[in-house]
Amino acid sequence: MVFRENKNRINGCFLLSNSSEVDLRKTMRNDQDGFTLLELLLALSLGALLFIGVTHIFITLSALAQRQWSLSNTQQQVYFLDTFLRKQIQMSGDDSCLRKTLGLKAIVVRGFDRDDAADKLGLTIKSGTDLLQLHECVRIHGHFHYLPIDFFIANTFRVNKKNKEIDALFYKIAHHPREELITGMTDFQLFLGVFDHSGQDIRAYYKPSKVISRKKVGAVRIEYVLGSLHQFGVLYVAIRKK
Image (tube, rainbow, N blue to C red):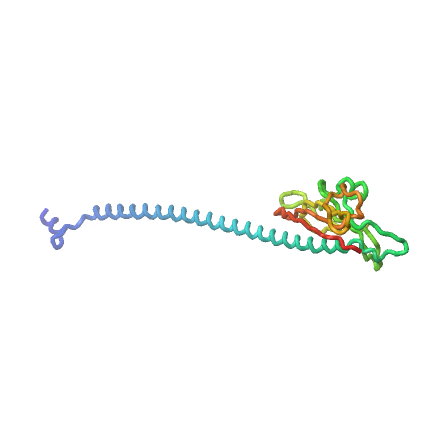
């Protein structure tokens, strides 16, 4: 006993036996393994939160970019509609191609609802909307003709990503095929401005069916809705006196 005790004593300190060292190392290893597992779980949790955050930011930015594109596209459509229709309405009534000796003077601006458009023009337009008809000299095949030009909303026979039918604003010159002007327009309401007794000022705006004498029409008001953002707009245009 004395020899073993002396053998395990170095500089006055007792050394642990081999079995004690092994037990201590196992305990330390188990502690280290448990701490590493906790770190792993924490890292996985943080990674999941980071992934969710990045995904949310990406979706938000994508939606914002899509909305900005839609807004920009709608603004371009509004500008085009305002410019194009204003020019067409102001030019309406140009009968310079008619023989003056005939004394012809067709009605410059007319309006039709869905039923009148179907009965009188043979055109199918969107329910609840109106048709604007202008008359002017149009160059076709090298010759000018005084013809009607119709503006109306109709089905494009196409569907969007949500499988919903797409409407558009069309224009049609006389018997020629219709042409798509602005895609995505959903409403087109027409009001005709009637002169007062002096013939100088617009007294009020009426729906086409309420206007008795279209020769007194001096202005046009169009209320429309277009684009996926349902942009509402109003266009006022005075008809130039010829």
